[in-house]
Image (cartoon, rainbow, N blue to C red; front, side, top):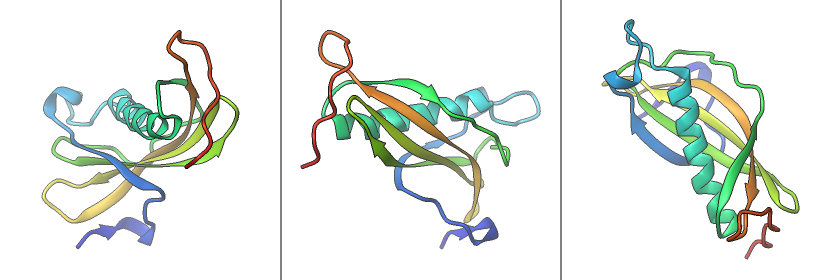
Length: 132
């Protein structure tokens, strides 16, 4: 059974899980923030492409601050949900959580809003289709 630090739980759906490896870390064993952000971007691409039923790109990432470090061996769990759909863009709320190595402890590492834009086959913004 997983235990969440401070009793807080992730918001959104689990979109991506991956293992933090030594090649993703600095000499002190802390995982690079850019690696965490890249995994969050990858998760957004998955979720937004499903909603747009096609190609999407990242247009913006709103403020991101790291509350806890990731360490080698931790499992990074990315949760996402679509907070807003505009004409050609979507805002996704994304949370990164660390399941600590060989434990059932989960800690929130960071969160951010990602703005994703739907593109047509020619690479131009295109309307996000209605749900359904």
